[in-house]
Image 1: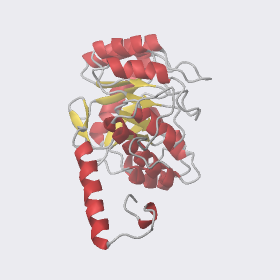
Image 2: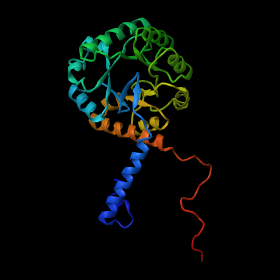
Image 3: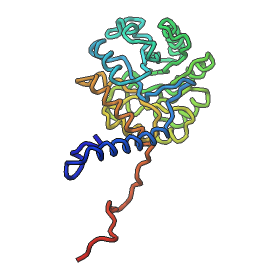
Image 4: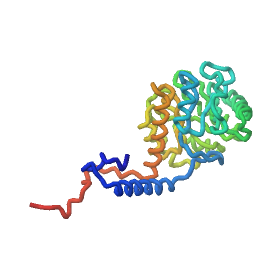
Length: 298
């Protein structure tokens, strides 16, 4: 796209010029990309910064297509829903190739710390049964609020402390609370996962200021989770400096989930690249793109 003839004023460029331009663009992008490092969580490295889920899809086939289109390497799975064969989760464990995708079991549906700890242990066993013997990851969700689905900060901290002691790599889902994020990091969590807005609400980034504070102070990866509805919002979250995104509803509930999954992948990459590139400063007044000196005067 960068070297398409339509991008030039006369619409024509010699073939050699197009090739040279394409090479220079590729070299420039590669130079910026080399400034980046892979996403590392609890010592495990991932190339993709987009995490996806398995819930809310109209069919297993749509979920499989979307996961493939997203190029994600981490997929979160609700332990309770798989075990109880809840609608939409029948055969889910067998639907994906777990030799290529890292499972992130989650404690969705747990309302207390005690429930979440118990389900986390089951999730670790489920991962082992599917061939991931060394998988100790758990996405920790403690949500007693059934209307707004906002996480319980006290229960989350209590569960995190116990699970870290048991050797889990804990990825806690939290309100965008900088103090809580730092406390969870201090007890040994592998990431923090602040919400952009309530789960499945599609409201986008409503907690930007707090997420920025969390990113500035975190020494573990910050994964923005919940509320992102569009690729533009995904890119914006990555431009803030988030290390990764977890997106489920926006993909699963799209009219074409696979196409939306691909769009979210591209937005995540674009947002990360923009963050690395460093945006221009915001100014109070206009600044001419072309210099005013040396111009022809009448």
